[in-house]
Length: 420
Image (cartoon, rainbow, N blue to C red; front, side):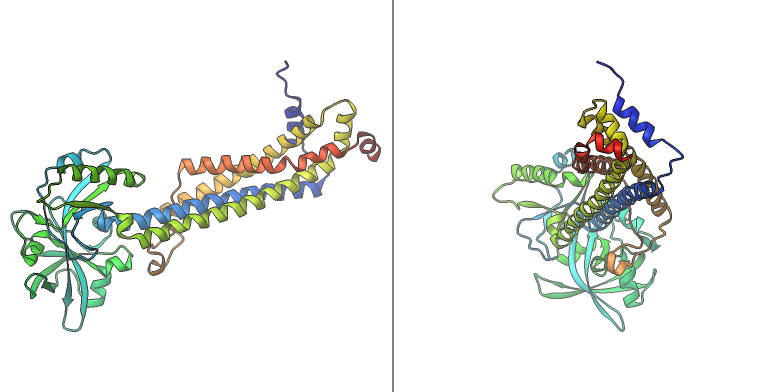
């Protein structure tokens, strides 16, 4: 069997030919190549921007509540929680689960901030020495974070830029807060000092949370020194959220006793379902965009292939006259189409990758954070996404070209040669 591919050889000679006088067909083919390049450019940007947007918003929500919360089974969805002991026998086993990044204790209590002119409702979130400050450090706009310890209470708190603007507060100002004790129905007041101001652009979270030393919340709730609202667990890979949640549930149930509190793990997707359901809806938009664009690009290539076959009618007739099979002639034009598709894909990839790099570095395109929760258009460019988009574009477009290439079988060699 000969290793020489005749169809590929002819296709290359036609594709790389220069100086042809067929300006009309060249313009049609160039438009088809442009359609492939532009289509792939838009598809890459659509996937990069939507996945980047989902990732950024998701990370901000996770920054306020971690991936999984372990709370008392008797606690409802409010921020008034039933306390549990921070000394649990299964803590080491949970920390040893593959994929667990950090386990930290927390406590929450609703209250209000009162100034001379304004009153604002908040949730005071207590954090301990094991708290991971990386998210709030990345979103800090003024001041600094505080350090919590088990030995002494720290009066410093962290508030959002939105609350600071609403109440006309700044770093160093006192913060007067008021709380109602559910057990005794008494009101308690605490004076804090603002040490830092953060801004995440998540309006409903920024307006709500104030971070303080967890010791203050124990005092406000009349809890013991080892009592907390629960544990926050962060993981390395969001895709493992369900499997790690199941592992945590099995471990806590294994250690549960009838006379002790049972803790339940709540994934962040269940705690804030409205946000994650909204983010999941964006996937449908991407699939619609991808489908429409690849259809348009495919039809552009179909028209380009038909033009190529029409202008090479004489060549097809000669090949048929010397005994070449229809499938071999069809392969010639499929090879040519493949070259054109690859040329368009090359330009589409280069422009899209360059755009993503420039946007991620300089943030040229801005967003309204009150509507989109972000200041700039996010991009999340992954090699796996590029590979799937490129491979999918090639396969779907070539499958679409199999139908118009069937036109070759309708050309009669005697009429094609006589026509020339």
